[in-house]
Image 1 (tube, helix red, strand yellow):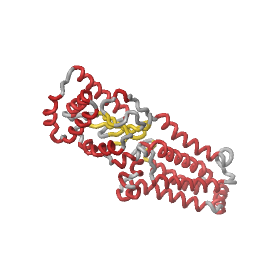
Image 2 (tube, helix red, strand yellow; image 1 turned 60 degrees about the vertical axis):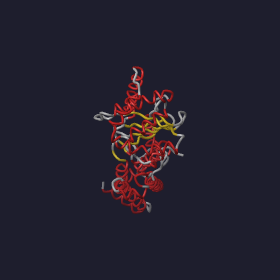
Image 3 (cartoon, rainbow, N blue to C red; image 1 turned 30 degrees about the vertical axis):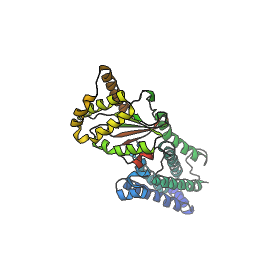
Image 4 (cartoon, rainbow, N blue to C red; image 1 turned 135 degrees about the vertical axis):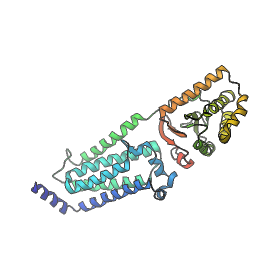
Length: 343
């Protein structure tokens, strides 16, 4: 045991790359702590665009968590393990850093192909891990206590395996849109668009009303995006089912343009919704056929919400082609939403 400790000590002192490894891993620790603090301290997040910036956008996605734990905490743990292995078990450093490299490639892949936005903090962390990986490869060359099979070629294999473990479930689990545009009646935009946003809202929801100017801006500035309006009626909102029936009836009877006009008016009169509905409901003749259409549409919307995992309003589900790429909860800014749409 003493002989082994002495050998490790000699290796540490003779290899000039040992100190750079400590320094880079230490920078990683500081960065991950900073990133986690930025999620809690507003002025730190301003360094990456604030609440509507790319960092905040990426951190609000499900990809910011692994097994329910923030990726920044996983990153901090990884850097601390590297420091521990450097000091106590040098043979474990390269496997650990290779796994980190694979994880960073996964996050880069997610941002590039799924989210279509890049977090500045994440890119800085990627650069740190890349430097750490390169130095570790050089540091490991010629070592006798190499724990991986073969030689240095096995390190990229470990990185690729780590990437695959994270990426394959995401790729396989990506949801298709699951709805036919041919049956839509409550929408705005091009039915053939590759970009789609499902907007789940409740007519008595104050945050849904706050989102309306953002929706108007999307319609004006992004005619290439198909907006699909879904009902997600919150329990306890007694007027929402009535408002939903009225607006959907307008859609079936008078078309999409009149639907959107009625929808906007309902939100505008949210504070006096009872009086508004009392005055406008008589303008619609609810035949048995119309009632069935409206009830079926609302039921389909609620089922759709369950499929997507909607639990609150407003919720926006963004699709690129057949893939669900992002779910945004709350009355987010226009700048936050378009980051997931691309140009």
